[in-house]
Image 1 (cartoon, rainbow, N blue to C red):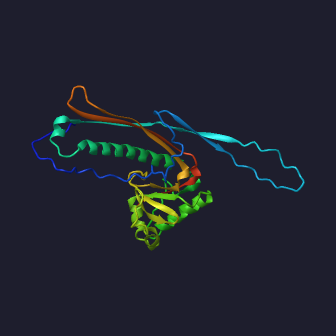
Image 2: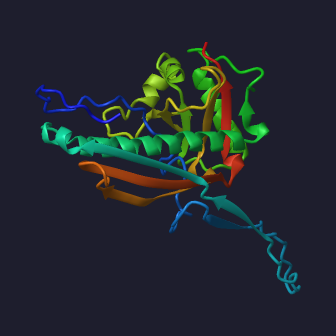
Image 3: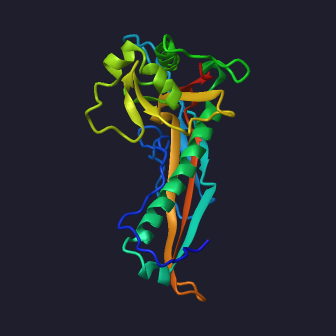
Length: 283
């Protein structure tokens, strides 16, 4: 629906919509090292990998084995997501306003594109977690309480330890209700919020049990139940994105301004064992 001008004085500031924090697309949650140059949806990024190197025993004055031929493999990250926005503001409406609604509309459009990508990434990560790295299930989810929510974080850390995931740079993304349980535990209050006076990343609410704790309303769930609380390291998930086209144009049969943009992206979990997941219901 086009903006409708009525003979009323416009306020100097816009009342903007409330926004969710975008978490899964952060560089410390999903890595961008394969991003490169993306020109259009449908491009594919090939990710090569090298197998383990065998270690042998050396005996003095004895020939070593012939050079080992390393095996290699590759994975394909397909840029298969394409989202766009396209909005219009009439010249009469713009003339009567003392705020720049185009600027705010652009900001909201950009945020909406990123929100779609954030939700997409959450689903990609959830689907890739190995069964052995899951606590609880969709059939029998765990039900954390204020007394054991922190302990579930410790358990997730143990799963990552057993998968040789680096200690530095680990994250866990929790819904608001789980964060609320942590705030009722002295172990989190004492150690998890010591950076509360510092500038934290988008969605970050503290540190505890070896994790950066991030809070998000995009945590995958089923009808506000069976929340998939994902922990891991940014090495697990590769994410690539690009705004491939952004145009300001004048609609042929209108007086006004329009803007449209195209966002393409894709993601792949390249190291599934660097993720762990707690499937939980509210207590």
